[in-house]
Length: 86
Image 1 (tube, rainbow, N blue to C red):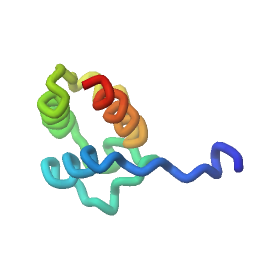
Image 2 (cartoon, rainbow, N blue to C red):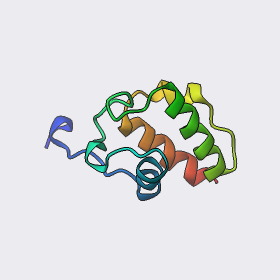
Image 3 (spheres, one colour):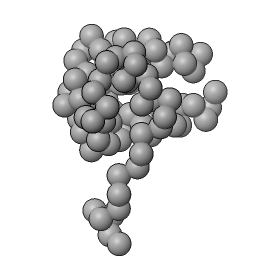
Image 4 (cartoon, rainbow, N blue to C red):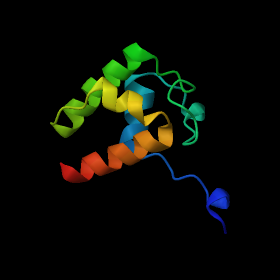
């Protein structure tokens, strides 16, 4: 199976919960290949997500870090990596 045929990784359950419960993102739109803009994260939502993640991990997460991720898959990887640090 080539990389393009690999199934997209599932969204971490805690991240999924934050996006759906706190930011009111539709669960059906949480496709890892989607851009953050496509799932409804505007600049205000990115700031709110940065605050939520900072609270979740106990370490600062900036809006610039969130903005730079571009896709839900990258956000998911960032979430997993950061959660393993804390």
